[in-house]
Length: 570
Image (cartoon, rainbow, N blue to C red; front, side, top):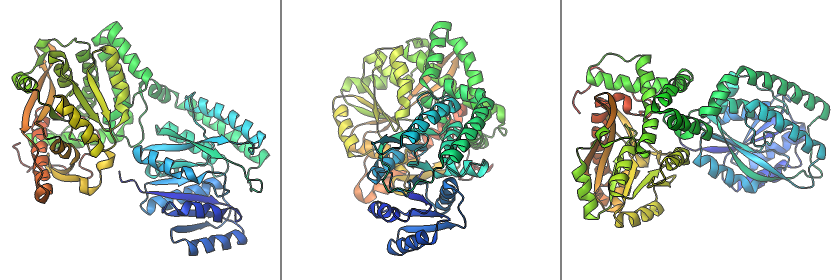
């Protein structure tokens, strides 16, 4: 996702404060969308002057006053149509601290699918009636979202992901008055959106203009909470399931569901595994995966698209919903297998590692190496084997903090977990320096090559190479990193297979290159060659075990599926 934010200001008769607000925001060099909610002629003249004076100001006007919500929703739709991905809503009355804008933007850029909310820090200027009223609303929002640690749901200083929010407001009728901020907050929580917080100072200017009507707006808010509480009861099974087994963030890759699962959900499965045995834990997977299968339309569509590509290349029949369910179920089973590996419950007979001598030669040489894997099978099998057999130090580079919870559970399963999680948002020089020290100490660095992290989605950091019959984007980052580390590079895949009556794994370790060489003049050409070689090997294994590739989103980004006449050899 490209991060393209704008600023959004709804306004109704705040002609005294709007100029100062715009002047402070102009320094951030972002487009400023101002939506005039049917203001008086004085405010209209001030806004016209601002639009003429500041080139980044875009002015829209509602013909009559419809309420703050109506202005914000109009601004969101205009922003999305103009190509922006996020809108930072800020009030026109000067209450919000514009110095915090960079903090909102930084957090949203790192978490583009989250709603970033202001958590007010009030001074003595806050009206006590308004303050106490917020506490009542916070209580009811906790009930309506089943989240006792809810953040402030009334602050109008928040940054919305536009695609997800506009999809909601186009589908559901959202109130347009002072109840707007609360209801859209609750409904986005019901959608499964992630919420992040920025502490921000909020002041109430002495000459500030407030449109809050104590009687009418409190009645509106009371009716809204009654309606939302009823809505919560209707959604209770879904909300409870998310609470136990993790929420599905809107637009999120389905392959991150286990990584995003709640601590309670992980502990439930972990406890069942330890107390009742692996078989009971595997039975528990069926209702869990069944829920996500039924509710995850995008995941089902992506799964069928991928399976269709593989089956056409292999000459197999068209896949159906049963194949997609088995695909998702295989992902859940791989999570339990990770636990088994780190508990030491996968014996040597269950792990077939024909390339073990190659690993031993590498470790005996004292050299470090980069191991490039994929979301194929179970990469943890290789990491567990490396640690358990020879006490090798393994450093896993991950592009998100969401994997931390699951890996914390693995540490609880085995105190000798032995894998250092290195969380990065991009592969920069600081990451290379850190990892170079580890390589020089003879340690292993594991990274996946089949997912484009958010920071590497721009065209100059991605190349499209042929994969399963169509061009697909692969990130340069892992291969540029390997070239900077100046060490041997291996490909590694741990594939689940049945060995007699017991499930087991076969680990494939392939030497990819003694060094990744990227001469400056041939850099892009050589990168393209390395990426194509990697994609060919990934395709080879995907065609062997199609249900074990766990990227449940549109990997081809809209590319046409493979045709019946596509190539048959890998």
